[in-house]
Amino acid sequence: MLAVMSIPPTTDRVAEPAIQVQGLEKSFKQLKVLRGVDIDVARGSIFALLGSNGAGKTTVVKILSTLLKADAGTARVNGFDVATQAADVRESISLTGQFAAVDAILTGRENLVLVARLRHLKGPGAIADDLLRRFSLTEAGNRRVATYSGGMRRRLDIAMSLIGDPPVVFLDEPTTGLDPEGRLEVWQAVRKLAEGGTTVLLTTQYLDEAEQLADRIAILHEGRILVNGTLNELKQLLPPAEVEYVEKQPTLEDVFLTLVGARAEKEQR
Image (cartoon, rainbow, N blue to C red):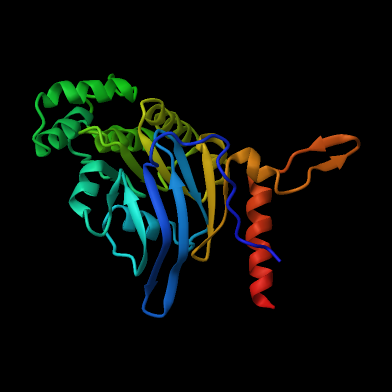
């Protein structure tokens, strides 16, 4: 029998988690999408929520970003309750969806300046120049976004989401549709976010993406968290294989397919 498991963090959290979720449930008519989700995300870390299409990843993000109301359970973001303090939550976060929300007619710099002005921030030009530098887009800053590659558009999209310095950023499948080079560019941008102290909750169905970026990984399957831990902790759930006296450690893909496959087999009985 495969039980839902949660591996405790290897170090004690000094500060309150940036994201706290307990017993989260959500249904759409007769379809139960979330069936009691529990996760904590430490401040300044990258947390990957991994799962197949339809697992409930985007629903979790929408609830945490106040776009949906949960049917049951509680969730706090940056110390604020998503149900009763929605305005405070929205001031604390930025959400980047599955497709880049940039204006292709404007230049990269103009996109950034526009968002800074909409947020009524002082010095929008300086803010734009700083973000172009941080995301290695300075040379392309005065070019129309229509000329950007997919990876460059995605980096600009993430840069736009940081205007106003939100402490928590949600990235919902940020590399969907990108070529390998574009994915690497986005990975570098995400690492820079965490290095600067930003908390990142990343949803993805790419196993290598979670391996490369995440401090902790949770596997969501049919609305439930199957496992939650560091990459090394997840690998220890499966025994190493030995071939010709060479020890082979299980990959995250091995863990994911074993857990999801075992759960599906059990439910079919």
